[in-house]
Length: 482
Image 1 (cartoon, rainbow, N blue to C red):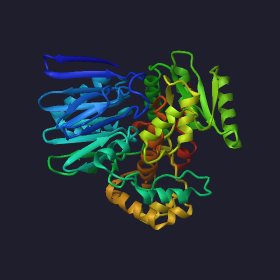
Image 2 (cartoon, rainbow, N blue to C red):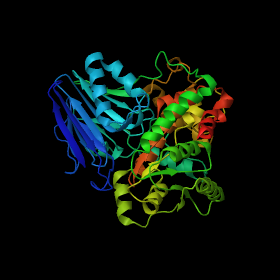
Image 3 (cartoon, one colour):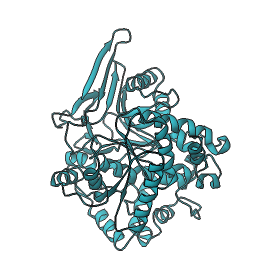
Image 4 (cartoon, rainbow, N blue to C red):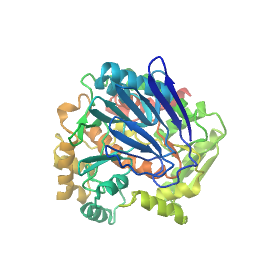
């Protein structure tokens, strides 16, 4: 962990930029953070302490962060930002820009700037009596909140918050998921905003949290903006290519970058950019269950693609780790249950821990995940059946969960501008919740970056016709150029 602290005499700003040290802090809650307006924020000694307005914040040493503050406003950036418009991934510059926007122009200016940054990050900012938490495009650094005895807690993992407010696991959710997974070959994940603990809520993409004195946290939608349009020419090819390529360029400035590669177009585009910008010899990899033919075939296709480009490829067998220390740390971090322990344990055992893992999830926000779009209105019942066409999607539990989701997410068609509610549902429910937990589990092993986690990229991908989106015209055009 290395920090640069300085006081700008001209502007009277206190500026601190901290670069992560992956070797410090241990596996438990790796990449995590904890914050509260309580004076008693207890965290391991290796975690870095910061203050943002009334909040005391502790950050795991494996997570980059930067803070800029003065007597008027404070901005803490947890994670790593990439400004693809300015072609900059300077954390201090980004934090200074956010602080100036907030201090001089207010919350709307800050949120508009943050909304179009790439990278993986969470912004915690204070102005006057207000504290707000604003996520990256798909909220890939998770944020949870809970309240006890007038004290509000925020954290990167549900376990961290639950322990502070004495929350108990949601046994109803546990039973629902166990029943849904019986004999199912489909991905089964939490419906709506139901989480491991009923008293703990998660911050959704396209929303911010606000904490005001004496009040409970409010969850407010800020996107789509009133002037959001999806009308890029040529199916968004030019906009996608510029912002996606600059994001890949930034990621490739990091050491030990690898690509999680499949035979598909989404990771194929990431690989194309990686080949252009990588600065050192490294490798691609694919995780596969040796007993599942489709996964083996996908790994073979990925290997052929990688080796044809002169890049070594590894196959990581999907199996449970025999490392008892990792299992203990993983089950401590995700105390109410792991979503995909076999996946995270396999990468812990099968890959170096100092790599940057390029994951190509999230593209389907723009390309369109839900192909069957027969439901007209986003009612709780229709959202539940879209969530899953299996019997558990028609259950009363699922309908109740999505009724809560509609209220919590202000999920109304008139709020979505040019976007289909199907795309917003995938963005905020599946990508914003399921994918974020998957990434948090992976981060117990190594750093994860996601080149599709950019509002510029997602809007560009969604700008084409339905055929262009489904055929990934923008991604294919980008890859062919390289």
